Image (cartoon, rainbow, N blue to C red; front, side, top):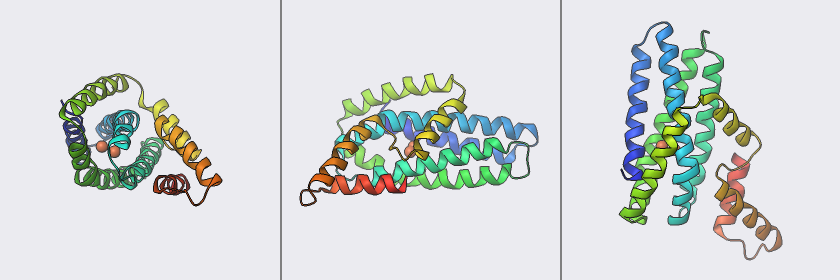
Length: 198
Ligand SMILES: [Fe+2]
Ligand SMILES: [Fe+2]
């Protein structure tokens, strides 16, 4: 399956899980929430580790990627807070806010990033990314979501950008903008803005 199709398929599944959460009662709500959390943490991993770095290479517009990563950080924070509040009065409020942020992010991703990726990449590349992502997703779904979530949140709180490839690029951009303001390019400017916002 092509990477963009896999992402859309997973978005639909999470939307369906949010609907199930709304109609669930009692302890069932906790079980559905854990499915939502598991799926979102695994989805974050495949986008952050595989899809976004590939987009970074293929697409000129870095704003869309920067904002996506910031939104992933907010989603993770909401999952964490909801999980901490399971069984408490605030639990549903956190899940409601989580849903709103996820829906916003999904809409933006499908309106902006996925069409750009589809235009910028060959079919073979989308197929091969899709395969890698499917494999990574399945591995992540077999793990407890909490350590991976904690790790991602630690990185957000440390102000790190969230892909290793981006990290390497950012340190180059940061040093080039320190050394030469006249040669500062748009990627350097966007990278520092992203670090500040993260
Ligand atoms: Fe997504
Ligand atoms: Fe995303």
